[in-house]
Length: 540
Image 1 (tube, helix red, strand yellow):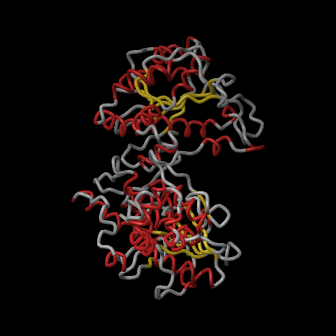
Image 2: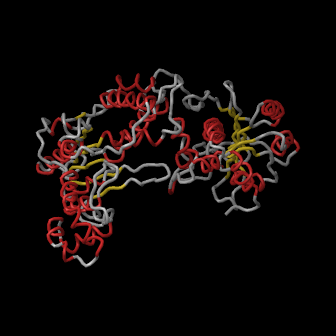
Image 3: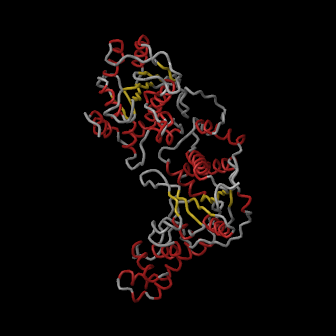
């Protein structure tokens, strides 16, 4: 049964996604406890799940390159400038291809390739065939070459990418196809023939840039007309460039034009989207140590987990213990002081710092036997409680004598502390009458110093990218819209899991970021410039 009218066929530019996933994490690859690089596998699994959940394809195929077809024969320098991997990285990449192939089989996604041809030409052929058969074809790729195929029946889904040159996911069809290059789809081939493409080493016409190419096409219509009337072009630079490089322009046009008439032995009906083969997928996710993904898919993946445990590959499992009796505080503080670092996750009644009050504190310490704790201070009757006859147990205020051991710990500059976005936490504690001291690390700032161009430095995003763990999001805890409640009304058990896991996640991030900061000689920048700014008396 189709989810869309007309039914949608998604054609995935396979190697493009693999390269993107591999190079996005090349400096900090995701690895298993055995040292196996699983960055690509992680990226592809998450992509497939997001594609399934967000777009619900009716038909789906993964297209791979199987050669450069006529292009290398026509132009020996085609793609010759692409960076070569060293032996170690090449071995990782080759292994990643094997991982992806196995995952695609488990996800029951058909893999298609035609010997001697690039994926572009296979995709162009299948998209054209699908459009003619009454489907809407959706090409999944960030490659600008595919803009030439867009029409009322063929769309493009650019999956985007992270990192310093981040690109947001974008759906492109005939309504917005002209925005990226400045020319409509039917002129894209001629446009690329003029400007060339350094990534594929397509020469183009040196002396004509993107704006110049768009202007010429708007004035003359197509490449042949531009070349025929080159002598009449008023601007000297493009006129002389075309006079000297007309052959390069024609060659480039031949190279960038996507074939649409290959012999591809595929019945479109065989590409109907199917549910994953869970029996085949479970052992793969276990081998890759993607435990959170296994839970998301309701797979055991060979490892028992509980609702009170942070499922973080490479990090210890951490039960979250609620401490709501002041008599237990001295023993807890002794445990915290015995550790090398105390992670904090300060929770408030709302995210409006000036009106929020302290609701609870999540705590964690490093170590294989590390544990997480949650200290409730401002919870009211839990959501879903049936007219609870007694108040929810809370610790007294931080200023109360019974909380003195904890308050002394938080004020002690000799006890190093860590958190994520501690500017917020610091203000909440200050509003509760306590001035925090000893903040040694803030993982949000560590992430910013390592990658200032990154789109998101939230704890949820970072822990997902760096370790594969998926934290429960804020709105999943407090609800959305009319059902949203204050964090103080969230059941203590849910609040404890949320805050305790976040404290443990900050520790896991720091263990990843700290050596990289040292290697790049960025620790001093963080300690001497960024971190002191957290202790400012106001929050913007």
